[in-house]
Length: 334
Ligand SMILES: NC(=O)c1ccc[n+]([C@@H]2O[C@H](COP(=O)([O-])OP(=O)(O)OC[C@H]3O[C@@H](n4cnc5c(N)ncnc54)[C@H](OP(=O)(O)O)[C@@H]3O)[C@@H](O)[C@H]2O)c1
Image 1 (cartoon, rainbow, N blue to C red):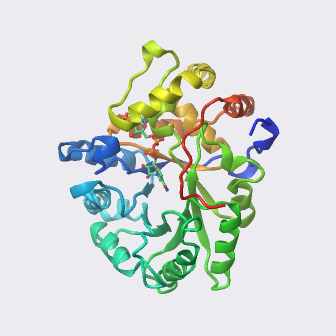
Image 2: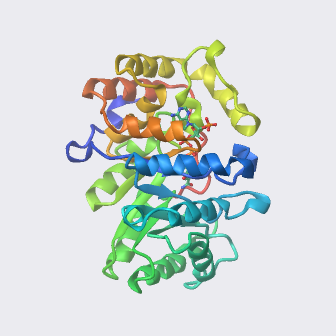
């Protein structure tokens, strides 16, 4: 990954994506310190995002830890339900179903799908396979995907996406669905200035472009690390495992943060906007994790401007030279 040429130029026709809303933190105590006392703020964050025109919401049936299992979907379902119908109709709510080892066969997702739909109070537009089983149970994935395709074919959900698939597996799934006359709507992968691999010429981005699959960038802020300015004195360290990750990576990404800060300053924008707009400049829809109204405002504001071509190239270069990377998802397939 040391060669800047391995990063593709921005696709001319798809530079202007919007920004999607990620809801992993809604219900997750372990990594994000969730507490039900935050629910009012989460509701305000949701309402502000909708007011500002954000329309894509990403959740998962595995979001929410311990007794808060499924909480992200439940909260999102309640928030969507509270909107006036004309507002509601403009939204795309996408959930991800986890291919746990006990979910087997073509009907293995049936119960999970119904449970998600219930938690989301019927407001479910896209169902996504959360991760690939190719590395540990390759035989599990094909039938599960057939089952998800059955749901789309039967009109029980509008569209189908996948997540954490590599380029080879992505092509196979695309073909599998094409044989049934169905379209793969989106692929969701980790994509940020600290995880740029998907953009390389052997990555998934060119395949998405070729096959007309929307590329969704998850963790575009590297869990918030890329939203903090350079310099140790200015660092905020979140509690728990996120703080440990920040402590390990921050000292090794200072040149990247410095470049980001220079660009942010020249646009009079926050650091987060640069991280978000780098994904957009590469034709991906960033799914920004947010839990406060001001974070929704920052994400929506980022979508009102674009990086200059030269700024994007500077960021590509410094990202490729960066000494540290985000940990890869262990279930990402080839
Ligand atoms: N498919 C998958 O396997 C997968 C995996 C991971 C994530 N995802 C999806 O992608 C979404 C986004 O990823 P993510 O939640 O991992 O992380 P992220 O978007 O990289 O970072 C989110 C965190 O950054 C901080 N932040 C947000 N806006 C900010 C702003 N304007 N200024 C400063 N800090 C800001 C917030 O932390 P504080 O609130 O602590 O400030 C926020 O919780 C998830 O919510 C989920 O929907 C999918």
